[in-house]
Length: 375
Image (cartoon, rainbow, N blue to C red; front, side, top):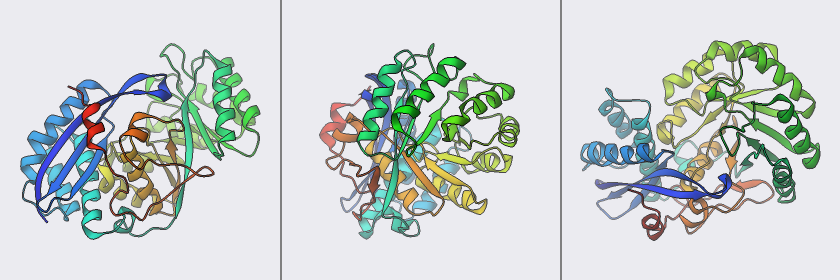
């Protein structure tokens, strides 16, 4: 089965979970010579990155992979990595690899009549824990608390909040306000739900002493983990923090490839590793990282907060490992989750079922792709 065409589609859409702020993703569409189509996605996030990703996919990877056997996914993954040796493997080039690789797995599953998790080694879980993930409004605690009350009513067992609606008002800036938000959320969700908080560590809000203080401040609220408390590149600081606190640490969403995850794992500063197949070289790259995680007896979660395609890839990734924990999940209806595909993911009792449908398990609506096309 040969690759006939590869296209890229930069999309812009209003994100309800961010009170309508515009966000961006790039889709990849791979078509074989027998008419089968696979779809993939990367979380390119910004308009310029989204347009640049399209250029790499269509001007770099499309001619490179044309005529190749579409079933040789890992070989083609290596071929893309060899292509970007000078301007990758991190950044926009990694977005392009991620989207095309995901589409190739979707295409391969459809060709072989098998769900992607089977191709990754087997379905070890029939369902995956959905961690309902929202953005805090640090200036409207009542609204934030009401959101978590609704999440409890919806049956989620793991919930997460973090950041903030404006850069000037994010979780991590104001100690007293941070504690008040977490206390109020814990009060409304009760003791039986697991709670994660996410800090904008990339902005360097906390140094190690401050992070230790904040972790200890929040110990009474029994957090499942605190996510990205420090700048992601400061691995020695993570190791210092982990040695000093009891609450688990989550990080990894800013990593790019197997080598950067290897450095993170070897640092000794993380308990739960975040993986986003729409960023870290697709499902192939994620699969290699998971093998490192399993070898070190750590756990991972899927940082998937974009479209139904990334949700699908994350489900298969989690379903094929015993070291999987949970996945980020958008609890409200949104364009990229509920319009982009004709068969959106619907949680039941806080879990999402792993489908036996060939490929990723979702059907992209090409009319909706055209509707949200950007640039």
